[in-house]
Image (cartoon, rainbow, N blue to C red; front, side, top):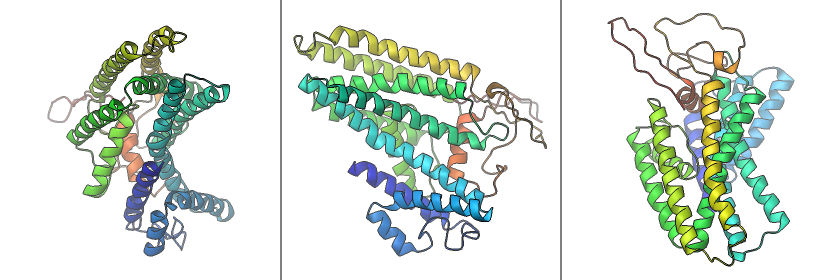
Length: 367
């Protein structure tokens, strides 16, 4: 909980420092869009006291009332909501996912499963999967022709995240129940490898070197539990490599647990888990493939831009309008560069087009 709070406050502070330098960021709000955002000393103190995230929520509520009362400043409210969505996602994987792993580990160690524990575990894993969906729905607002995600698409997206995250967390807890000290070593090794992989992708999410390394370290933690796309390019290959690695790692952890488990204590559930967990993970991969085949909006960048906005269409038929953070601007004037960057990575599909010099463009399909 302490680590999660520190990481979230650091992200909030880095973003606030950047936002204060935006031209006209507080023009409509007078005192600044984020509460006390124009007062550096007070804002710094709030973040040191671990209250920065809370005041961001208060600021979003205040800005929402201002939009309702004065009918202005909606772009600032959207800006704050996008940041809150990203911060909640970070908090989810820095706090909720490790806590869920610990909860299952304690239950296995005690060899007792109370009803309230099972309900709590189910609620926690559902909350984690739904938070990923909430973040994804926030990215949808950067789509020019499809700002809202249909419930069918959201359900498929929720299911594949639920079916991939749940067995991953359960597998880690099972391994920790037989080799509790080695789970720390396992995490550190994988986290270090993941951070190096993020660094190799040359991410540019933050506006400072220290902030960027914080972001890379956080992505490494998220990847320990779930896939999270961080850069453009051939992400289909990166997603395949990641899931292949996690499948292999999960298989090794399950086999280790099976070999070191207490056969008498685990007799009632061991066989069911060793069969159910891999099948659940592969079912999650199936739903993920289904989502990207039938529900994922694919934007592509043609040589000539379209000047008009197309009408609302099904998820798989979204027409193009540039969502680049450099040469295109969403419907609201104040662009959240951070979320726009992730939206571009997630949706942009640059199919092979014939350029002016006769060469073919690079195909980029984002998962």
